[in-house]
Length: 131
Image (cartoon, rainbow, N blue to C red; front, side):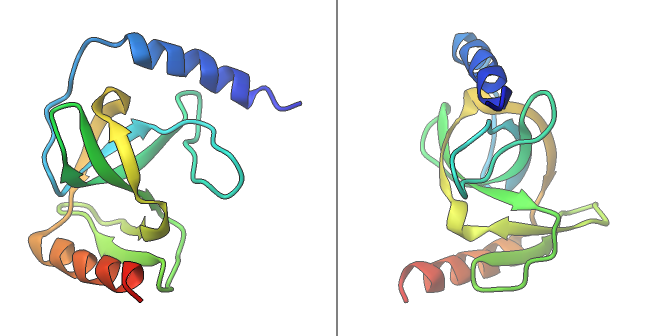
């Protein structure tokens, strides 16, 4: 059996005990401790199970709707291509993996998406959800 689920469970317990709350805003991109998930759900990589996530909608200081990102080229209806402000690397928002996250999962800020790209992303997400 794969020990990554056991490793993630240990990290998840530490995250839950975390007291520090990060201040975050819509359009910002953070490295989050996403974890080891099931089936086709996206998961984090490395020792901390990290993945970049775009803050799509803030619900409170403790929770937000986030869209996980990938650097793998994905040009289809389920992905949105953009370049983060002041970064040279192309990112792809995985629209089909949008979900609620706790701010306790935030590790460090990575960047931000431009206003124009964010507006275009919202249009593409609406098209995906309301086909």
